[in-house]
Amino acid sequence: MNYIKPEIISLKNSKEFNEKWLQAKIEEDPSILGLGELEFRDTEKIMVGGGRLDTILYDPEDKKRYEVEIQLGKTDESHIIRTIEYWDLERKKNPQYNHCAVIIAEDITSRFLNVISLFNGFIPLIAIQVKALKVGENMSLFFTKVLDEVKFELLDEDTIIEPTDKAYWENRASANSVKLTEKILSELGEITSDYKLKYNKHYIGLEKDNIANNFISFIPRKSVVIANIKLEKVEEIDELLESSDFDTLPYDKQWKNYRLRLNAKDVKTNMELIKDLVSRAKDEYNS
Image 1 (cartoon, rainbow, N blue to C red):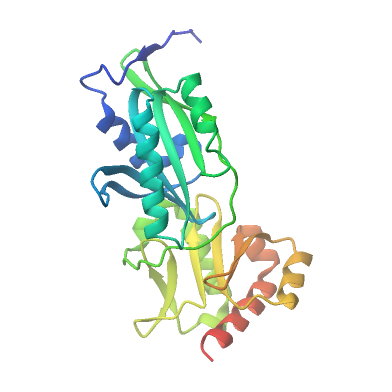
Image 2: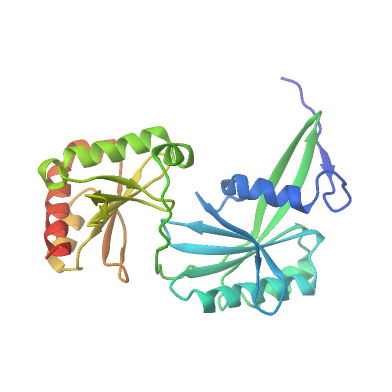
């Protein structure tokens, strides 16, 4: 294997690889930022009072929105003010979400870090430095998180319903996780025998006679499926889940969902408990 020294490309000075190109790459695959399996939600959003927010990303597991601002070259004072202003406008407009501001720049200086570190802990803010590297005829991007945020309590989920299809989820998550979703529905037997999967943009729900009935809903990921089971939080169910080997996510207080990260093994070994929870949810939801 031969060593090839990469060439660092200045996006600010490049005519071909500019800010729009960088923004498009992030929106095509948000995971390149190293912030998890994020989803692209909006681009160039017009803000109240003027200006455009570059990109909005969303994490359905942690139920968090990321307001992303991109600047080529060095960061400056106007960039941080704009980033915080857009974050503040979004959190006030959509208080049901947890929000985090993200600054992406080619050069995040130590002086700039000193300034924005004063806000960290009061304003959830992440700073990411990006380097564009050229190796032969190939281009690559390298992202480094240079300032992390303080973790905040999980809040809410998206309520916008936009119909899609099975192929959309196979492309967005994976074919295996969609198959696992179908298997969970099948294994639930009589509980869901009258229902079929309803593919929406942000989750997969259930429908019966073309009417949504989401006492359980699903969010396929790359290798697991998040199951949202609509039940009031009670000590009995808490104890059942604590004594099980399920990988649980924090209870969703607003939407009253127990949330489980299910894999193929869970479906095979813990299906009776899943059935019990879903049966309770069906009775409670439709009572």
